[in-house]
Image (cartoon, rainbow, N blue to C red; front, top):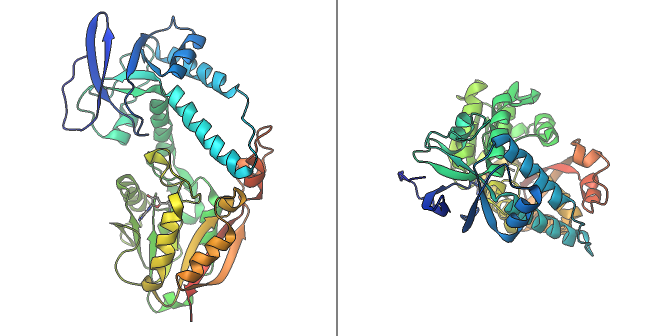
Amino acid sequence: MTISRPSTNLPTIHWTEGGESCAALWRSEAGVAPPKRILIADDTLSADAAYRLACEGTALMWRGDFQNARQLLQAMARRIDRKPRQPAPTITAAFHLKRMAQAQRARTLGMLLIPCTADHLVPLRRAPDVRQACTEAHGPAGAAYVVSLRELLGLIGAHEWRKQGVAIPACGGSIHPHYGVFAPIRSEYVGLVASTPLPASLSTHNLAFDIGTGTGVLAAVLARRGVVQILATDQDARALACARENLARLGLGKQVDIIQTDLFPPGRAPLIVCNPPWVPARPSSPLEHAVYDPDSRMLRGFLDGLPEHLEPGGEGWLILSDLAEHLGLRPRSELLDLINRAGLQVLGRIDVKPTHPRATGPGEPGDPLHAARAAEVTSLWRLGKKG
Ligand SMILES: C[S@@+](CC[C@H](N)C(=O)[O-])C[C@H]1O[C@@H](n2cnc3c(N)ncnc32)[C@H](O)[C@@H]1O
């Protein structure tokens, strides 16, 4: 494979094929480093051999049938999942062990590689047309590249979500999440924002801020509830594009301004809503930034900045689940302390039990984290300035 290098700073991977030195660009949205050792593999490779090589850190450049590669990946995953879990002394240790195991699983399964052409075509037998999915995630390719099959399947899944959308009745339509943008699959937190009485101070200045808007879902809910103007912020380019597209599709583009900024837009508002990532832990890839908030950074930033952005009589609505408390990652007392030290007081709290299957179902046998998920409560904290 020859490289016509586009104006990107993607790394290059190298391997030998048919006695020749080959190279291609390496794409990994999950931020995985380019594999160092690459062998050519096809339909003749057994799942046991593929699994062993992947565990040893040897990547496999697939030249066989695409659907067989998919099956091989599943067979490798079964071999990983069959391994017994390490016992953990506490639920917090179980959480960290699970995250480590998930990262190791992702590394091993990421060793099966798929070539793509400069037009995002996969030049393999029975390969699906992934042009749309890849263009949505990467934009135009410009040069041939290599990607892990696992990541490519993730892109295809994300494309399906984006096409189908998630029905959110409180938005009066569907929200279409883009690749890498936090999707409002858990409806309970959207319901909280849709049903909590709006602060009376909105009647004098009808403006709200939505901090970390993601798909724009909460801004859309507020707009449907009659808030006249909403300033919605995010730092992530994909989230900003996604929110703009969703709000335009819902006919709310004029009511909601999408702004790229760190936390707050300039000025004050009588209502400020924020749904930060719920779990204080280090994201293991850039795609996890909306789920894990290291050292509760976004939560602290929101609480610390809230008083100077709230109008007198205004309310900050913090959406947060207590999963971190059940996992022993952030006690309730720490949250209350952060609220208090920011100069805020709790005006009220509305709680709801999650309804998604991981919380309500029986859980996988022996899953030490199931008890935490089953006990989880999602809350809307109504916060006001002290005094
Ligand atoms: C948990 S998601 C919530 C998204 C959306 N509000 C919702 O409820 O579905 C958190 C969002 O905050 C954004 N974010 C993280 N840090 C931020 C910051 N410092 N300033 C603005 N947005 C931020 C992330 O990009 C992400 O879209």
